[in-house]
Image 1 (tube, rainbow, N blue to C red):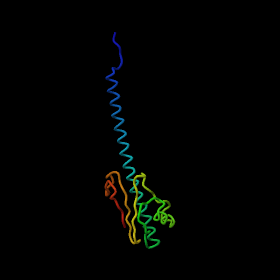
Image 2: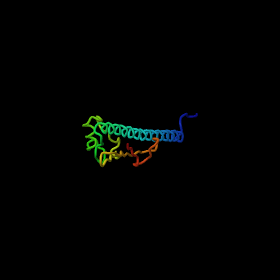
Image 3: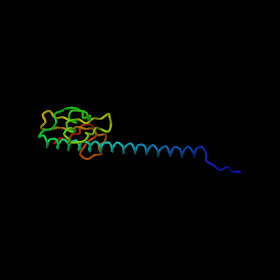
Length: 132
């Protein structure tokens, strides 16, 4: 009499295939999340850039400040108080920072990091900047 069912080898092969597919899905989701954070960073920088342009249009100068953009820093509170922006955005990860540099109010530089090189015109790392 012949017994039907799966052998232990067949079960192990199926489990290995399922584990491989799961690992591929996790890596894919991780890459999607990384690219999403980078897109958010560029969008945030454009929002801050527009707020700075509005502030400069109102006051004929940019806020004088050099340091990280925390949402509570001098530049952020200046823009929010002037109604140039409702809330200055910060980086989606606590381990990264946006930076702002303006020593005399005549110009500025925004700095930010990206985790990938997936956004045209910008590179992976912390060497990305925006200036007027």
